[in-house]
Image (cartoon, rainbow, N blue to C red):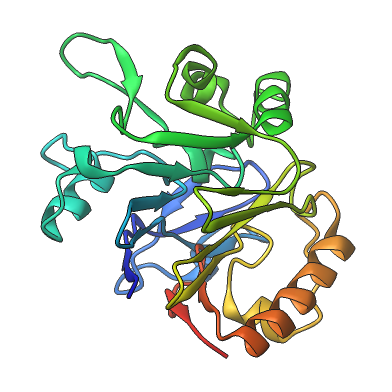
Length: 248
């Protein structure tokens, strides 16, 4: 039986500048934010199976008031040593998903992978694209270390990891976006990254203007919704402020 732990870094608004500004619903309102701002959760997930501690995307990489990475603190709060994470599966390398790929030690100033004992899985073309497109959506400094470490596997197209984690190259949100289905024989847990980021988008025929190919993303959501209904998938929603995960 797979255990799912949402690891939310909080709610944020993001506008055309691609800056993520924390949003506290007890004191902030959308009217105060720039026109066209979107309200999103930033929510990586840990999925625990009999074989692995699987982290799905890595958030913004923010630290809490004590200087501890939020991602590490959430894991510790759930009784998990961050060094126990065995796999880090990256849907894509936009900064709100990949900011926690690596971290700079506040004392030494040295950059290291945030989960040094895990194997990272990253699409090879997405890796090259992230470096090439360094700027608003991608921050090359956060992810460049992936090219220099042995514990990184660069995926191509569709495939399977260890016989039970399936990945598909989807495009849509960005050219080399990929999704994952963890099927441990009991549960099927689907992580659609930014192709399936919120339940509201799953339920409507919605074309997002911020997607590289909005029509492709919309078609993929419909396809995954149908497959998920038939096969009993649990969907993980990275950007949903209300529902972290659920089934149809």
